[in-house]
Image (tube, rainbow, N blue to C red; front, side, top):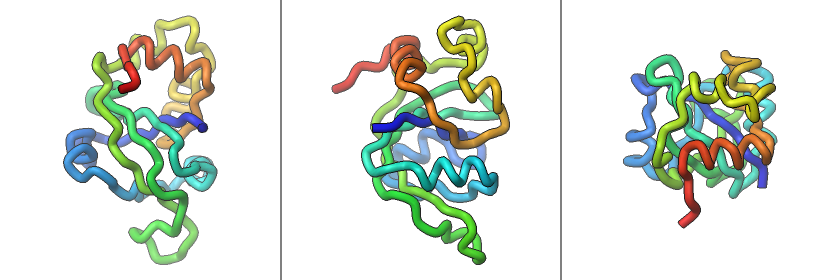
Length: 138
């Protein structure tokens, strides 16, 4: 299993909407590197759901329910999307300030490439962020 972080502006698509929709296509990614990461995702991979711009925090966890396919929100076929399923809310949201302050998260893409909307998360960073957010597997 690979780990990821996906970002969404909560006024465009929020964690609450993800939960209400259950499984939702992760569309609209128009950055080549982020799209490459989407195409690398496999069913069952997990991702942190991060509210960008407003909140700036990890608020939940999703998993890939369908591997990459052409994004239906554009016509060229150049861009991809995946379907994401809500797994659960982060018991204690993990804010950007806490992420930046944690020495164990040095080098995390969220800080290095802050504009990237889809990014891989190393096993070590995943485990640390889960601890910070008090995430417990059911």
